[in-house]
Length: 81
Image (cartoon, rainbow, N blue to C red):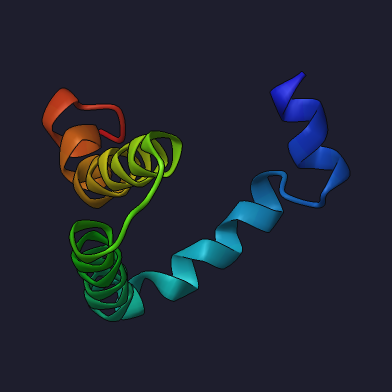
């Protein structure tokens, strides 16, 4: 089902090659993501948020960290060799 959705959105092999052109900007995206997550965590500690929002913020933080280390993990386990 996943590949069908990606192809229907134009994100097949050719479409995914577009993201390679964004690789030089990766440090900027990392800084923006870290800054956004820091801001949200500060707001979470200051204000009254429901447990649902706090869980959502932590899930998004974990996903961001996984994406941060994704290229390292791919190279470590030899998927792109």
